[in-house]
Image 1 (tube, rainbow, N blue to C red):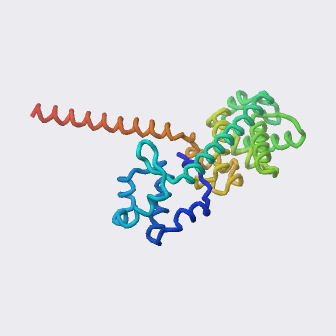
Image 2: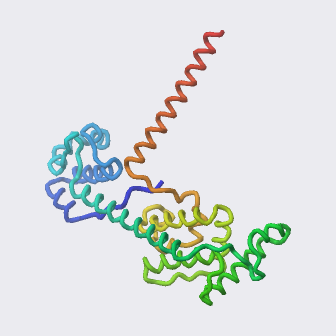
Image 3: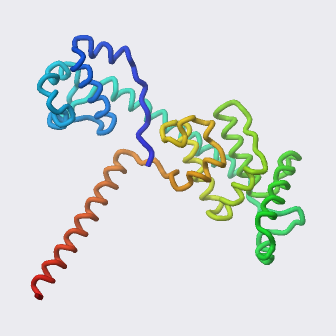
Length: 273
């Protein structure tokens, strides 16, 4: 699961907040920044647990710069505003990426992948004894030639063209597709299907835009077929806070049901002995 959107650290705001604090109190303040990033805010009891024995020494100074909502949850105002701005920006980027792929999909109807003899995948499957790697290399070479000529030959070439276009749209630099990329994409489409591969690419684009998860830390330079293939199972939909809470609730409910079932079985076994 991806992390929440990053936030811009406004050192000016932070400096003003801690200007009246000693070194211990400043450390407590920065601990609470991390707590707010994780939980969205914190109660007094949560702050007490986070700060431990330093709570009594630091809370009075730290509380002076905190805001509190109607539920009694404390938060650092500039951090909350920064996080919200980042969420809005991330959502806009996600919609832009989605719109780009949707547009490309409408512009270019898909065709069945063909090799240089004009055989469809259906015909290729009839020749299952042929060397699969050799076929992929042959198709990759043909796809590359097709893009150079400006021809649309296969769904692999369509995917690479859209993938490259998105990269160039976001970075201003061309994406240099090679034979290896066509082989990777061909393998993914064959294994998971075209639509699933496109959806994963959209998610990878969002990860690269946010540059938070470890395999996309370098931003758009990580937007490659290699990353898409290597981290396929790690590229999952980014959940909102509400969706995370709902997922956590379901997980806890499932655990409770499992515990109840085991307890019932133990009681039944004890009764029968």
